[in-house]
Length: 106
Image (cartoon, rainbow, N blue to C red; front, side):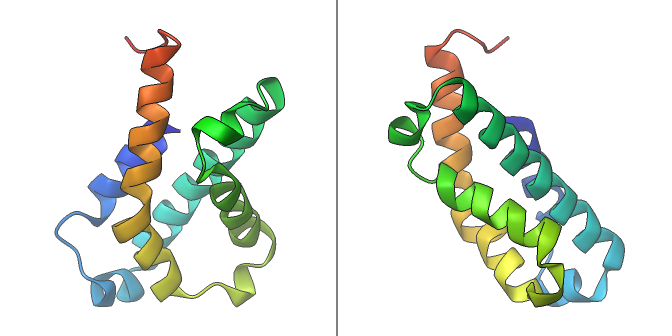
């Protein structure tokens, strides 16, 4: 989860929405990392349903992963960009804190 979020941040760093819209490889890479992040969260939540309370944005991240994977024709570049630029850092920070709490960080 944390790695996928960090990679998304690296991919979009110094880029604009216009850059994102114009670059199919960038869009594909970001969307793939969102799929990985959402799937990792879904698996973690199956193991520990209490994570929902500690990672409140997890449901939205899983739902977003499902949109990317199954409803990609309805996905807008602006929505992906907004989530990557404005919402992802909070989830990444919460996930990193959870990993540290569980002593799973190297």
